[in-house]
Length: 165
Image (cartoon, rainbow, N blue to C red; front, side, top):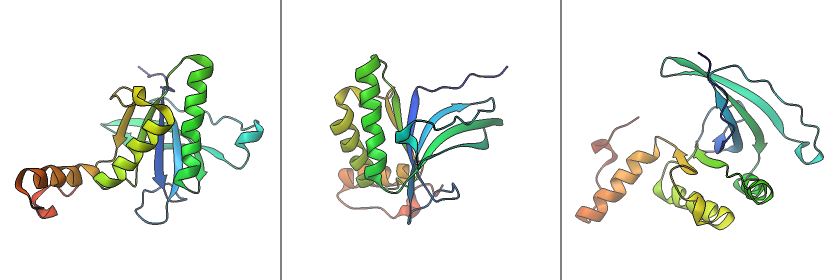
């Protein structure tokens, strides 16, 4: 059984030009939708989309092939933030809320807070729910665990005390 694409989720993802995640020279990509069925790449005829690329990535997750439709590349977080404004404008025009997933390149609680602030300031408190905003950054978990441990004990633990993946 093929699953339909899910266009109600948009992700800001930091990647290199070849699509791999990185912690240094990053470009930002918007994940437009995900599907278990192959996706067609749309034509970018709208004048505001000139200079951006639509592309599909493909990978195996949980034993299934997954496809994602992306829009990119944005040279900075500020440029990707302008897409959050488009999410807001879409909601104001249609009444349909689109979820946002921040993924890739988010490795510390401090970076995650920057995204929370960006979403709150651009989209408002209503988007700060698990249904409309989430992180797709597994590396972030270790830093959050270390921050929680520091709050409880008053000192940081070594990263070696937490998972490394």
